[in-house]
Amino acid sequence: PVSTRSEDAAVSVSSMRLVANSLHDQAAERLREQIFSGALPPGAFLDEAALCERLAISRTPLREALKVLVAEGLLRHEPRRGCFVAEITERDVDEIFPVIALLEGRAAYEATERAGSADIAALEVLHERLRSHAAAGRIDAYYEANYAIHEAFITLADNRWLAQVIGDLRKILRLARHQTLHVPGRLQQSLGEHLAIFDALQRKDCAAAEQAMRDHLMAQRNALRDIARNHHSRIAP
View 1 (cartoon, rainbow, N blue to C red):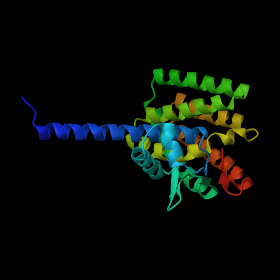
View 2 (view 1 turned 180 degrees about the vertical axis):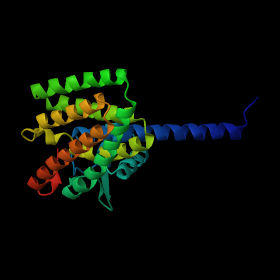
View 3 (view 1 turned 60 degrees about the vertical axis):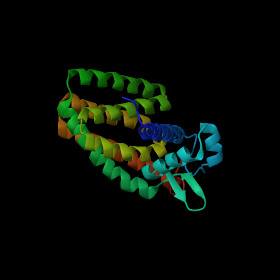
View 4 (view 1 turned 45 degrees about the vertical axis):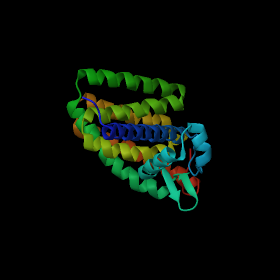
């Protein structure tokens, strides 16, 4: 069949929308990466003209990307001033960690229920990697392995509602990055907490895994609170 002009126009408009959506999604992801890496530090002003040039996009998809990151809590928008990278305050730490401790604790419970021998073997590899990085004092590498372990527990839990809410909160907490691991003694403490969680999972003790994960998250909270107080209630990378 031969397409009519109206049908061709509809296809063209649809294609344009897909391209625009793809551009702003890509821009949002690149900005997230820069925020999480610290290339765009907390409090940094986002110069739209410079970003358009750096990302090779126009103002429209960039502004759509900025709206997405504002909605995620990674940016704050100030009328007549523009967008700034969000900063985590002591109050944020106090409010978010008890919630995420409950959620990730539940994820650990459900992951322990569902974990099979292959899952446990895969987690063993990750925990060996964690031990190695801790022993060598490789903080950046330890952080990446630590993050992968948390993701593995969330994936194992296989609860999309938990995963969605935890994912939203973890984006905010990544603004603080891995600075708690620089606190004297915290690296080894974190390793011990992870090994306790993994031990409970291996024993198929769901309640113990849940409690150990909660304790781990709250220990992070305490370390971040100490840092916040030493930096006038602001937490920076």
